[in-house]
Length: 348
Length: 60
Image (cartoon, rainbow over all chains, first blue to last red):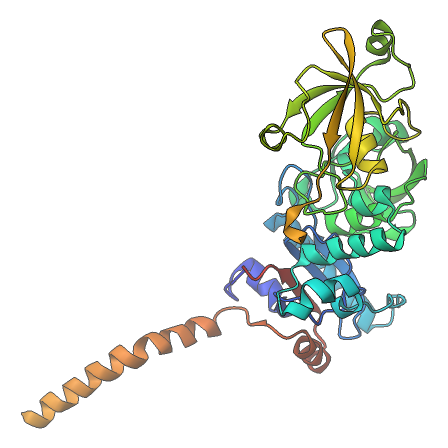
């Protein structure tokens, strides 16, 4: 981003000390924590390493859904305003997060740093998760399904305007959010950008059933209690480099209760219909699923407190490399079929 | 005449060799200076009382 100092953006950037980091080897990733599957991310902070805000974040559809010069301009202005407040002593100091360097993640050292290879951003998140998997502390809902999508709550942002709401549907509409509101805080934490909102939304306990979103409505702050929908944390993992996610090489959709009943399956089960089987599965013979198959059991289990499809059950409850036995319905016939899951190969 | 030719040759040489560099320096002066060292950014922020705009991106 080489900007002329005379351009509007350049005039804003001239009021900052700009730095670009392309190697993570010596970066305090505890301080600059984020979703590591973003290839471009910004922080605005001060010389005391107090972070004012984040700029970046993405959704599954695209890496640049929320990256926009208009919203960057809004964020840069807000950063300058927060800095003025900080210099005047009007901004409360936040506690510095515990330092964490890539060298503190043993698996990252063993497989990347120790081999003098570049510590790419996504490797930090992935090796953190692999380390957790080895230590038995991996919480897939939190660590694998990072950055829940705000659209699941019904929030459509007017992206060039930062956190101004363009449309409010579903859960947030029911809570009273309206187009034109500006999202100002999440569970009491001020948010200035989509990057902030996504970061702090990701911090919400996956067992939570509600959150508080404060909006600025024509100068008045309005707190809204949002009831979280079932599986609000569920996100599309396809763009992620994740080696703790068992690769199944099929996609499915949850059956409705009526469909389950019509097939004589448990109403509270995770029965699902296969919608897509990847060529990889056919080539490697990792499964013999066919489009239209209904999977109603995995290793004899038919229901789960969280998963609503067989694919999600496998991703949550199995480890990459596991072989599982599926109970399937094909053309009305019940049968069993083996499926081998894979671990992402770039980590070998 | 010979001296004039030498001077012209030297001018042409200097223009060809240093012209692009001078152009680049002028262009750089007009552009935002992006530091590659985080500690240096903190040091400059302290000295100038400016905030820091920190970009993380992939090297490739």
